[in-house]
Amino acid sequence: MNILAIDTATSLFSAAVSSPAGIFQFETDTGPKHSEILLETIDYLVRAAGLEPKDLELAACMQGPGSFTGVRIGFAAVKGIALALGIPFVAAPTLDCIAAPSEAWPGLVIPAIDAKQNRFFTALYRQNERLTDFMDADAGEIARAVRAAGQGRAGETAALVTGPDSALLAPLLAGILGENQVARDPASRKGKSRELLEFSRKKYILIEKGGFSFEEPAPIYLRKSDAEIKSGPKHPE
Image (cartoon, rainbow, N blue to C red):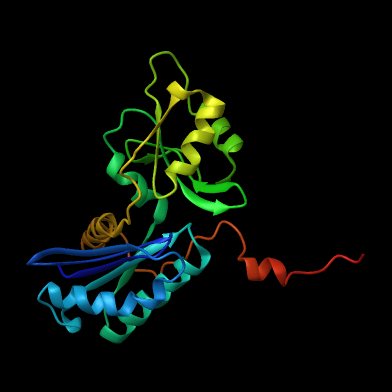
């Protein structure tokens, strides 16, 4: 199936196209400048896969949580492409895709996205089962959730912190829970467009089998944007 997947939810920009010729992926650390290379990258990947834009059958983006601007860019791009080509589009929770490659880890998995203000977007997983709601939390709040999930019992495998900002969260959690209770995936600072491809393929198959219908997905925002906060009601002095 010919699928386009775009990951713009973090500082890492990642896009991938699947076709009969294989999977073609591009990734770079663009910071907040995803939009500057987005369309050019999509065009390059589609043609590298031996396709024309009209050959795409499904488009996918990250649903969030993540960078407010990044999530909006991904949705705008995918919705525009889907509308122009007359194809469906789907979205996947960002944290689910970040946790997916660590399915075999025997303990808790903690994906980490820097939410600024000493906070992180995260959730707790065990073998790809999400155990908590999505969180906008500081290290102390995350540590309490880890303890509530049973981490720290005798013989329990250390919790694995993964994702683009694991290097920030892991030492904070280790300082609270103990060095032997926290491990970090050193190879986890990567975009997740490949995982997004797999998610969208599985969802499309379920839809084709009548599992559920296509409904336009909505972004997942765990907090207001900085602009909304700044433009909010002012308290009298």
